[in-house]
Image 1 (tube, rainbow, N blue to C red):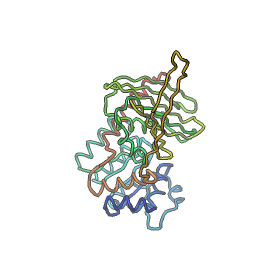
Image 2: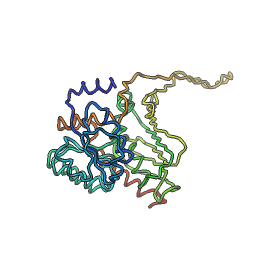
Image 3: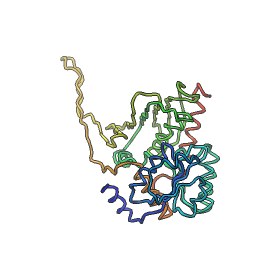
Image 4: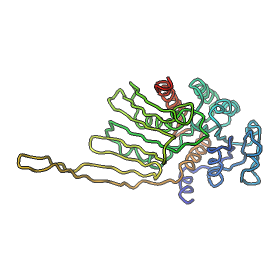
Length: 330
């Protein structure tokens, strides 16, 4: 717990009163983390299911509500962790009342809904933050300092199947990596190649995507929710190194070739040797905890320092474009 307190002291911000809408998987995680987060004071939880509300293990002082509008007067900020179709209406409810909100990814069900949320946030000068949790992963936070001349990005995001999914693998899982890619590589996408499969649902359950950019760089993204293990990794190729980030372990390794010999007329065989660097990076702990801290910081300062709604919208636009090009679902 000390590392979270130290991080919060660095922000030098007081605790804010937070409400959480949604008690599903992600909402449940937010409730769990908020209960031990020094940056937030959980004052209310809202859900349309009274039985799920009553089953929650929260403090007696936490209000359990069926009507989200009742949170507006008692919260400094609201976390929206509902199914995607409710993101836009609930986001509008908060922003129209001038209450900052953190909306879990994806930002909205449609690009136009996302644009409307951003416009409302600007009109009312109210914080709108997108819940792209991987941006708060310690390995991701450290990555930029190891990048010099990246020319290829490789993302893998594999999970076992969960029956709760209600959308394509692209907007469900791959969108995490799309947002990270656009953050790490500011170049413009010029071409998209895709392939996908449907095995468990009516949508694509696995997808592979190859992107090219106007600076000549490329990216390959592989995502699946029908795997047999959980994988979250990034590999970035550069002229003199390959940087690998394991998002589950939250660590970074750097591979470099330091010696190469080729065969000659005298019969010398090919030999290659390399070094593996394991740089020290500050582990800030659970990314969701840090995300909530960043939201509290944004609410108090009325400013976003990491994940803007514009970056979330750019990832959403790219996700929809990719989805439309997957052959089986075109």
